Amino acid sequence: MIDTETRLQELQRQENVIYDSSSRYDSLVAMGIEARELKDASQWAIGDIGIELLNEAKDEKITKTEFAKDIGIGRSAFVEYIAMSQFYDTYMRSTYHLSYSHFRQAYRVNKKTLEKAMKLLEYANDNNLTVDGLAREIAIKSGKPECIKMSLEDMITKYGNIQMTVRESIDAIKAEAKKDQAD
Image 1: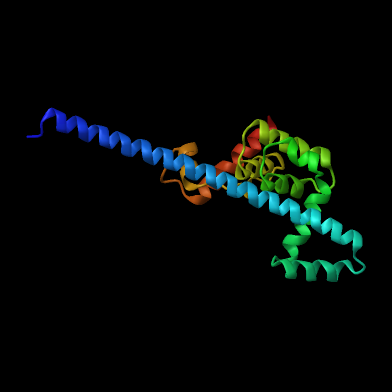
Image 2: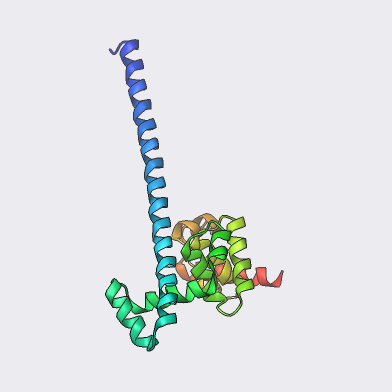
């Protein structure tokens, strides 16, 4: 039989392990956020550099292709970074604490209208939406519920029937979106 003191020491050790792993997790989350922010910053920086390059270039197509190759990224990514940097100035980028991917999502929907894109970003910021959450909101508002991505776990939580087929789940999502549009 284990004495009380030994048992108390064991409980204290377990508590320290839980605390240490929680603290470690928080540290890893902070490191992950920092890495994502560095990636965001690099995408904006490459876009800004691309704008400078285009201001000096004679043959835009060749320059984009060659420059993208020389810095080790795909041409399409380079073109996107430039378009994003042209669409959102540095002040707009700092208005919300959102990722580059949030800005890209809003840009893809509103390439012509900065005001509409900024309203989407404001909505995402105010509601603390992930990029996937913003994509779902855009799909619902655009009347394209077939574009909504929902995990099986989300479907089960929302619709409660684990026996529901994927087709039934999609039909339920579409019906809900139509109902939301009617309201």
